[in-house]
Amino acid sequence: DTEVTQTPKHLVMGMTNKKSLKCEQHMGHRAMYWYKQKAKKPPELMFVYSYEKLSINESVPSRFSPECPNSSLLNLHLHALQPEDSALYLCASSQLGQGGYEQYFGPGTRLTVT
Amino acid sequence: DQQVKQNSPSLSVQEGRISILNCDYTNSMFDYFLWYKKYPAEGPTFLISISSIKDKNEDGRFTVFLNKSAKHLSLHIVPSQPGDSAVYFCAAPTSMNRDDKIIFGKGTRLHILP
Image (cartoon, rainbow over all chains, first blue to last red; front, side, top):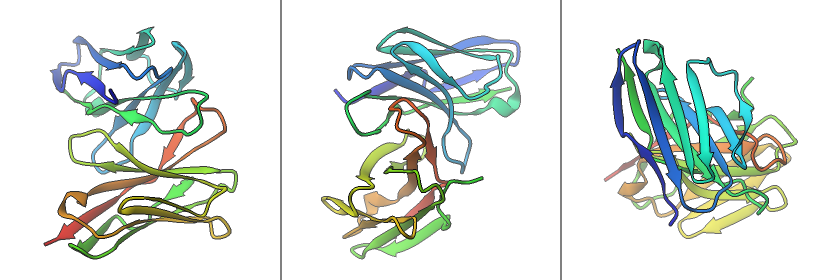
C-alpha cells in the first residue's frame, strides 16, 4: 500500500467555522507533512511531524493547528480562516533513516473560505 | 531567494519525441534531487531522483542528468506520451536530515501535442 489518503476532497467553510482536515498513511512512514499549494505555485511546507512530534513549523498562523494522534494519522484543525487561506492542502509522508528523501503525497483537500 | 529554479513555465512537445525539462540550483550543498509530476487537482507524484554521487539515473522512459559543476539537472522523457502532460517540479532537500524541508522549483507545465 503506497497510498496517502486525505479527507475531505473538497471543503467550503465560513470565516467563523471550525473544521479539520484528515490524512492517513499505512506505509509505516514516520515523517508526515502538511503543505499548502496555491494555483500555479509550488507546494509550500507548513508543518513536519517526525516520530509523532512536531519538528518544523514554517511560521504558520495559529489559525492552523496540526495534530498527529499516531504514526498513521495527521490532522489539520482550522479555525477563523481568511479568504486568502483558500488553497489545495496537501499531506505527504516519508520514511526516515532509510536513505532517499521521497515524499509521497495525498490527493489534497481543496479548501474554499467564504 | 530561489534556490531551485525552473525557468521555463511551459513546454510543448510532439507525441513520440523527447521532452527535456530543465532545473538549476544555487546551493552547492544540495546533494540529492527529485522530480515530481502533478496533474490538476491531484497531489504531486514522485517520479525519479538522483544523488550527487551520480550524473545519470534512468527509470524506463525517464532519465535524469546531473551536472554538478553547472549546478544543473534535466529530466528527459522519451518517447513522450499524452499522459505525460502535467506540471513537473524539480525539488531538493535542504539538509541531510530526512525530515527536513524539500524546496520545490516553480514547475514546468508540459503539453504533449498529438
